[in-house]
Amino acid sequence: MLSALSAGTILGLSAGIAPGPLLALVITQTLRHNAREGVKVALSPLITDLPIIILSLLLLGRFAGYHGVLGIVSFIGGVYVLYLSYESWSTGPVEVQSPQEKPKSLLKGSIINALNPHPYLFWLTVGGPFLLREFQTGWRSPLLFMICFYVMLVGSKVGLALIVGRSRNFLASRHYMLIMRILAIGLALFAILLFKDSVILVLHR
Image (cartoon, rainbow, N blue to C red; front, side):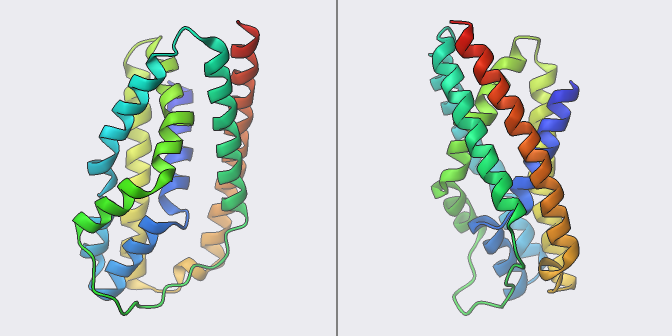
């Protein structure tokens, strides 16, 4: 339960506030209209992620008995999380200039998130394997992970929309960059755990 809580919190928060196309759209909606429009975009993962999760679990479930394959998947997941850690650590001030293009809707936010490769990579190499492993001990731990992950993912984007609606300078502040560096350390530690799981699975063949 503790691993599900910590993993969901760290991974969800880092995905929520890291620069990317969805965060850019949250900022765009907020600056162009108001924080309410940014919040609508922040909610789009709740629409697009469920099919990705189901597809990832079905695909990974076919290899449940192949420890070597799952070990490779876990290693790839560790590399991916380590890359996210590097991105978080090297994040600089985020530009928050008001764009000129036509404002996008919740539908546009859903399309952007559905076409973004990061959710697919995450659920195939990190989130999916974690859920399958936790399901072996019951349903409470996977449910806790999902709740924590999406509360932090969506909640952090909603929070940023509200903050940017009040102050456009937050994403260029030291506080934002300090939070990103703290998350980078947490992601690096989680990557180490994935590498450890990879070795255990490979040796279990």
